Amino acid sequence: MANIAEQVAVPNTTGRVLHWAFGYDLLAWVFCLGRERAFRENMLDLAGLRPGERVLDVGCGTGTLAIAAKRRVGAKCAVSGIDASPKMIARARKKAESNGVEVHFENAVVEQLPFAGGTFDLVLSTLMLHHLGRTARQQCLSEIRRVLKPGGRLLAVDFSEPARSGRGLLDHFHRHGHLKFSDLQCMLNDAGFPAVEIGTLGTRNLHYASARVPCCA
Image (cartoon, rainbow, N blue to C red):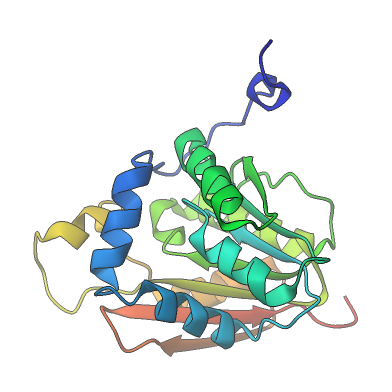
């Protein structure tokens, strides 16, 4: 008998979908020069993640960041991850099981998040938004705004415009263009995030955008 999750049709995304789950983990290790764990923890620090918060990782890939978030928020708090690739979700589930943590991973698209409004305290997005065209990116940001609680936060980390041209291994990620973070800030404002902070992570042209939903929303 087929698993119920396999029978549910996942809406199509107009963004680029990565399916090479094993290679993704290897590339992440290379990208972070073997310091992937420190990179993840720094991201969670930047997001201000606290015990007791509910977290969603959009475009979660193989689930490493969501698993790290689960360890920080505690056993009683829900952490979820979604990705458009079934292969990524399958690997994320196996990884969570082998690490003995409970994270809800679901095959879904960022343009139509399968959660009720006001569900999460924090949404994370890592190296995902540059895979989306402008329309899909705006839909994604609006959906993130919808599922965040009043006072909830978003931390998005991605590649900014390149300081140089090249065709190295990591240039594979830039097929759909880099993000203009000044443009991203305007899109976040349009999606209902009046307060947006933009900054650099100081490595490999990575920047971040930190945004918060008004507490009275």
